[in-house]
Length: 104
Image (tube, rainbow, N blue to C red):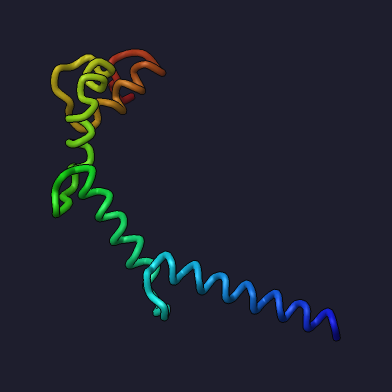
């Protein structure tokens, strides 16, 4: 019987700790289904916006910004003056398997 009380106390402490962690993460006292996902989405959008300098994300924005920041290194790796989608993958395969990256 004493073990049951001890386990119940541990379970209650764990529940309170998890509720506190969720409240800290979401900034909300009361949890509603989806709050964690919404907070993750908001944080991801904020991080992407900070990285790209754009308010609204469009496919390719992260790659474009990475190219601006590290373009010379990428261009040196692929051996071309202009990057096109797939160049990094083609260069990796060429370096591993040799040849020009032709499909067989």
